Length: 232
Image (cartoon, one colour):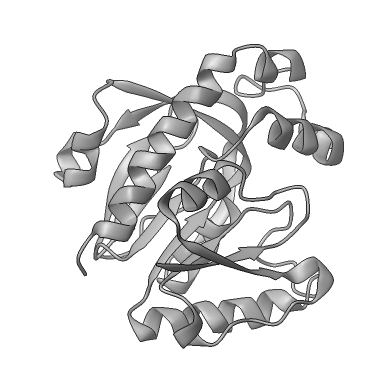
């Protein structure tokens, strides 16, 4: 399995995705937009993973590579390859699937529970036995559900937390890939996001419970194993 990662900023890196790929003996390639790496050819990967970032989708003047990235994602969509988007990556996938991305009513930053959308009937939900699954969040935007997409998870702050589209496009608004170091990097580089709100934790709350990181790692591994094994 050949995996290619699109990374927008150095402080939002793949985290435990690297551990998962190493354990599965998958190859990894990178396009780091912040150092102007080239995009791959379609034959160079089987799964494309699009990471998060502090920019929004309209920041094309400040980040002109966003237009190039969107065009590349549309090309990958047409090719039939699998894609997984995380946070900003999820928003990019929602947009290329024809739906809207816009500011959420509330910022959601820190560890908050997800609820499974059992009405979707998607088999991926059977992988997770818990009623509520904790995930790390760092976002102010949300998206509408694309046509033909199936909603997987919701939270109190944001209904559309994850979707799957035709079992080859997967979108997670949250961050199961974080290690403590990833959270520390976000706090160092995006601390201005921590405004008052019912769904904004303080830094010490984000880092104190190590079991949440272990749970997120376990759930991400289950999710990624499904992504690579699912039949389109």
